[in-house]
Length: 105
Image (tube, rainbow, N blue to C red; front, side, top):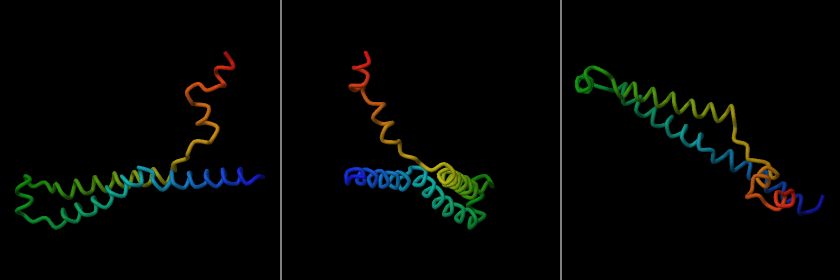
């Protein structure tokens, strides 16, 4: 293999790593999980006065548990179905028509 082919393979590996690292599901899941834990703890520490303001519904607890569930859903989804960058041939085929389509007619 030539040096050029080694460079291309290395860039493809780096691209795949970057796609997995900056997957939006990881960011959203992480934020919702962290905020869900914080709001759930605030809900567990609610006083009777706090509950009376919300018609005896512990809004912080329920919202925190919902946020926690959503965050964990995103993280599990990202773990089960990791992001896969498109192959080099796929992105070239889906271009603006290119010379291949013009040559075929």
